[in-house]
Length: 159
Image (cartoon, rainbow, N blue to C red; front, top):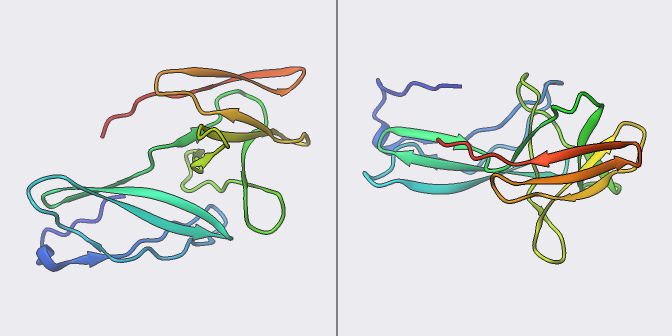
């Protein structure tokens, strides 16, 4: 979404944001962010919570432009009923919530004991499986069940 602030004295403008899921439930509000940065690019981490789960966004400023993005996100293009799961909150695993109507999920930045980024994928009705998130441009084979193999792939997306 775009929030025009051209008619506002933006140098002192601070804004807070929250995300809304398809059911209308909102995340917590972020701490206030300065809308305008110096001439050099400044990046901040924006932390939100949603039903006891953490969501991390990044805010990048270029002059009067503020861009919010997630470095890790997930789109299910398998054709299977695979969903992204997340540990935390009450209980063991919970589905990661979708924000927006495009089927994009913000991938929780979860790390295993070795420090690798991991994702938990679940075929509907089956137990979640842990998969290592590959380096940018890489792919990782994932057996969501012994009969259902898929691929977790990462791609570089530039701002």
